Image (cartoon, each protein chain N blue to C red):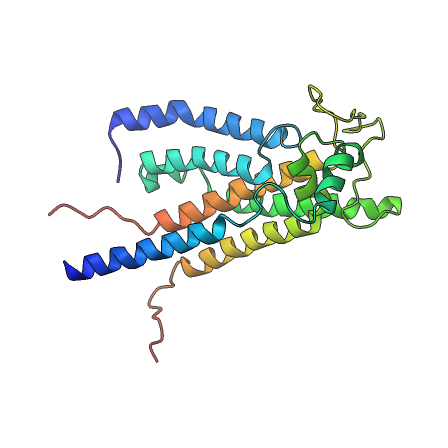
Amino acid sequence: MMKIALFSAILLVLFGGLMYIAADLPFGSPPVSDMDDYFIRNGQEQTGANNIVTSIVFDFRGFDTLGEATVLFTAVLGVGMMFRKMKEGEEYEND
Amino acid sequence: MKMTKIVRTTADVFYPFCLVFGLYVVIHGHLTPGGGFQGGAVMATGAALLIVAHAYEDITGRIRKTAMKILEAIGLLTFLFAGLSGILFHRPFMANWMAQTGKLFGNTVAHGPNPGDLNTAGLLPLLNVGVGIEVLGGLTVILLYMLSGIKEEKKP
């Protein structure tokens, strides 16, 4: 009972501190917005895509998306290696 | 691990709708919210529905592991070669050389809100389709690998 009360108090204090810090953050009005304004103003004309998110993800930052696709490919490779079929009589080596 | 007949029939009826909706999200990636990753995940959900509803042994004939591996490789290669294709026209890697040219995927777009045209955005639909195919293949292969380890216990 004592432990639960202590845990709840710590959690409450942490949550209050987080809210106190978050209240000072400038939501919706970034201090430096030059790049965002550039994307919103020129994205549609330069890429021809109505969806600005897609025009950023696949065009302005296409190289980053290539890396993301490679990460997925590598993850599938790793899963395939882990779940491979064992040969007859093959054992794992336990050192 | 076979589910009841109600679940199996429902899965059989609903998985084409999952695939069609995922394809819609992928193809309209440059117009509406979503894109290759999201649409591919929706399509993989259709495959997951089938795999969960039927037993793994019954599903291997309908969803083949080799085919999904090939799909995944084709998706990544599509992305890579679409990015490299700009080099033929003396443009850098990943340059959007098809946009605003008036040819395939090259209709001009007015600035500001407009109803949207599927035949725009140049390279982006190609890249979206590549990523969509890759995510479909990759997630389905992961699911198949993980569920292949589950075996039904024999009743004594």
